Amino acid sequence: MSYPIVVLISGSGSNLQALIDQSLQGKLNINICAVISNKADAYGLERAKSAGIATHALSHKSFDSREEFDTELQKIIDQYQPKLVVLAGFMRILTETFTKHFEGRMLNIHPSLLPKYKGLNTHQRAIDAKEAEHGVSVHFVSSELDAGAVILQASTKIENNETADTLATKVHSLEHIIYPLAVKWFSEERLSYDNGQAILDGKAIPENGIRYHKELI
Ligand code: GRF
Image 1 (cartoon, rainbow, N blue to C red):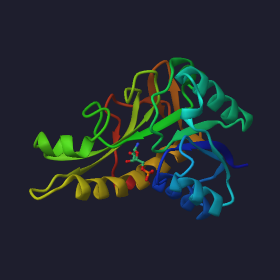
Image 2 (cartoon, rainbow, N blue to C red; image 1 turned 45 degrees about the horizontal axis):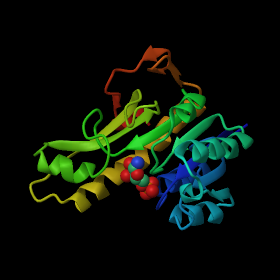
Image 3 (cartoon, helix red, strand yellow; image 1 turned 90 degrees about the vertical axis):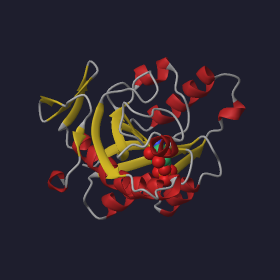
């Protein structure tokens, strides 16, 4: 039986597409029950519709408070009874009630080598700081922004002439490899979460996550 997941997006949805593609290719045994966006014009909703996936647009602007929005969002997600919630470019700060509800079964992808560069504009900030490398992290979601237990990281060299755009393109292609891989591990019940600790195959994952290399696939 394929593994029920719900994906939350706000934008282009290229990470969502990577999950759809790998599941169509039989590389991932998941069932994306629904895709939910807080922006009605998110291109990712079109990607979901083309793949025959149920979609919801829930604008945060229709709610008076963050709490009310998150309560409604939680209701929609729970209706699908997913075993995993995947944040794929979902640009919202989440309430503690929401993150607690999905603790240990909600993943996020963040475009930096966490704990460096939490928040926005990560590519430019890494270039400005003259970092030799930059990358992306998949992590469990905790109540603190971009701070939950890291699962996987992938890195790329920052070249001399690098711009935020060229770096973003390189990081994006890494995202499309490591996010499906982490989702695969979770859906195969190899990856779990215990009291703030990410665990793979019964072993604690180190603080900065597992560094991606080709043999992991
Ligand atoms: C990615 O850069 C991801 O790391 C960040 O949001 C972006 C989403 O891109 N969390 P896409 O919508 O999946 O193309």
